[in-house]
Every structure is written in C-alpha cells, then in structure tokens.
Amino acid sequence: MSVIKEPKPVHREFEMERLILFSDAVFAIAITLLIIEIKLPHIPDKLPAGGYIELMKPLYFEFFAFAVSFGFIGNMWIRHLHLYRFIQNYNEGLIHRNLFFLFFVVTFPFSTSAMLHLTPHFMLPLFIYMCNMTGCLAALFWVSYYVFQRNPHLAITGFPTDKELLYQRYKYNFFTMATGFTCITMAYFIFPENAMMQRISYLLLPVLALINYFRIRIKKRNTLRLVHIAGQE
Image 1 (cartoon, rainbow, N blue to C red):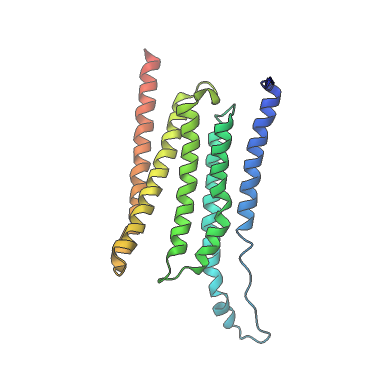
Image 2 (cartoon, rainbow, N blue to C red):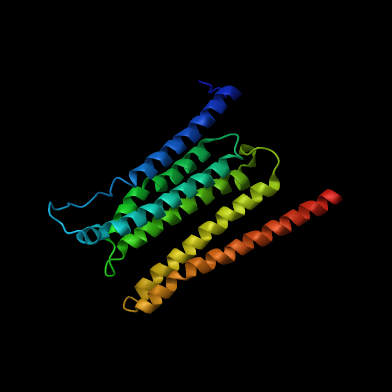
C-alpha cells in the first residue's frame, strides 16, 4: 500500500509559482498570436498615391478587432493577477478550473480571426467572439467562487472585504456579459429581418454594465460602512 506524502511548504510554494507562470505564458502567447493574422495586402508596383488609402481599408477593421481583443485579454490578465494575489495554496480543483479559464484565453486568436469574415448577412463570427468573451468571464467567476466561497482555506487570511468585493465584481461582470450575449442572440433569431431590433439589443450591454458598476459601488460603500461601524464597536 503506497502512501502519498504531502509536499513540503517550500515545494508547494514552488508548485504554486509554476501554476501562475504557466498562466502568464499562456496569456503572453495568446496575446502575441493576435497579430499573426494581420498582414499587408499585395501592393502593385505602380499605384497612385491615393490608392494606398483604398488598398489599406481592409486593415482598419483587422486592427480594430486586434485592439479590442488585446485590450480584453490584457484585462483578463489583470483580473487573474488580482485574483491570485489572494491565493496562497492550490488543489486539483483549482488547477482544473484555471485550465478551463485558460482554454478560453487561447481560443481568442481564433475568434478574433473569425471576426474578419463578419458581414451584415453572416453574423456567426460575432456570436463566436461574444461566446469566447462570456466563457472567459464565466471561467474566472468560477475560479473566484471555488476559492472564496467553497475553499476559503486556499486564500490568504484576512482581507474579507477585498475578497468579497472582488468576488462580487467578477460575478456581476459575468452576468452582465451572459445576459447581453443572450439577448443579442435572441434578437437575431426572433427578429431575423428587423435590423432596428438587432441594433437596439446591442444597447443592453452598456446599460447593464453601467447598472452593475453602480451596484458594485453601492455594495463597496455599504460594506466599508459596516466595517467602520464594527471597528468603532
């Protein structure tokens, strides 16, 4: 009968660093691969000066999609950094959930390249892209729920207010994106010929984001007030 020994604290700290460094490497590779698909078009030998602007027009949307994806992945890395600031230990469940989150990170170059085929009559690339964003937010929320709600021993001691606010922020971000994505998808399926309803559905995302922004602000203010009152007692 074999007995699996518990790793020493030094070894476990090194393993935790490997988990974080592996995640950072995935972020770095995914964010680098975004630019691979962008290439200069074939430029004829003889082209009038004004022709360069027309020739480069397809690159405008490609760079826009690249900038949006770069910003989103960068934001996910920042949130991942903020989350792991409070994590001091790990188990198999955390490893699997972290890999699930990284899965949606590495698919971003694909979903970004799919956006280059987006047309008014072919909206599937947009749904793929939004599904990718929703998956990232859902997986990050799942990791925070697993650590802060189900396995608080994995987190550092103290800072209950910061942990709760971070958890609530990730939860609201996921629900905002998931609700907006669902409503936009339903608008295209229920009103396939109504362009006005389809455009209106896009307004739901910034409205929900604004509502959740103030919800987090209010929750933060109320939480800090309770902490202040408890400190005075």
